[in-house]
Length: 280
Length: 280
Image (cartoon, rainbow over all chains, first blue to last red; front, side, top):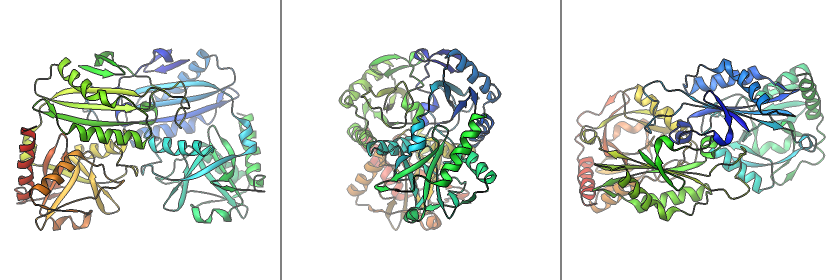
């Protein structure tokens, strides 16, 4: 695999960073995952804007944002991607000779790492739906920043995997925030519910698309927290993300959401989303 | 500088890790900072036990803990450390060929990075005391694990540095938890107060020593949260850590703790701590 690291395209076997990189020492960095449909990046500008915001929020001064799109397409070519491409992009504050918590006093170059892989989505999941578990949301209080401080996400995901589930849906103070790497939606009374934008939730790009589609399709939306103890009042559940697109949730912990998997609104949104991506 | 990385001693200029290391991608790792007095590691067993606990809590299966002490002394020799040594040690879950949140399915080798630097403490601070600021505690809910998910710590430290302070003291729901890389203590009525051990606070080794010294010196201790809005009821404040030892706090935000810097109890503890380290 050819990856991009700090101005070079090189084999992933030859790509190395210093253990003094602040990304390694402090998780002092941000990332994005982006994908293509019809070999073309989907919602690239939204991802770029979110990346810029993340960088701004943690005050990483990176001037190369305008080159990223070019680099990604170069990587797609160099890796001879056959199907679609799934792009991973990480920018850290860079590395210094000593480990000090606060930002380096003199200007250093951020570390930029980009990889692409040949990607075939597990379409089956989109139709069949997935199992989820509920987990306490242990993350920090700035989940709106797409940072690499992801240990709580790793641990929650592992719990999901051990329970035979595909995603852990996070609960903070009795309220659903989001999935570990997806946004979470529920439907009742023909209305789509999802947590409001806040420091507890990442502003997902696919979430944004879903909210746009709801508007077009005249589906009512309420950006309100779904309460854990009121879950059973909803008829449909789905998660969204760049790789999961719109995926129905058919089980939450032990609760099998029988008869609700054919969720009319989830399906309607899936069809409209599919339309969008076909025309990307 | 000679560092230790995955079974090799090598120049820090030649020490590299993969950008696919889970420490870099997910902050999926833990660390320790340890120091010597009289060229001998101080409270090494306590650090080792805490490291083992951190590894256990995030389920990193590392079998090499028993070799760490030997490696550290080798590094001290190889780096010809003249004064004392400050040791940094980080263990991550290792690297795999693909980025997946949950643990790798097959066993992989953890990444082990250890560095030592020649260390002369800023003794001046121990006598003069330091300035601190109060910052909202944005960290995750498992601060008892010494993980590298440190972005909130970086950001709070940076705010302290910008305010000309040496430490940011963190407040969660109106209660002082701890400093970004120190434990926090306050004194009133001849009694030492510090936050009780919980998931919101790291179990500091120097904190442990201080609690032992209080017992020996018959100083009363109450492991209770200090309320932000009751700070002014206390007479003395100090922070503790491996590098800060016992350092008086002489300013909190704009509040100059005048006349309280000569804190009798802080001094008593400093003298006793100094005694311990002299005899290390």
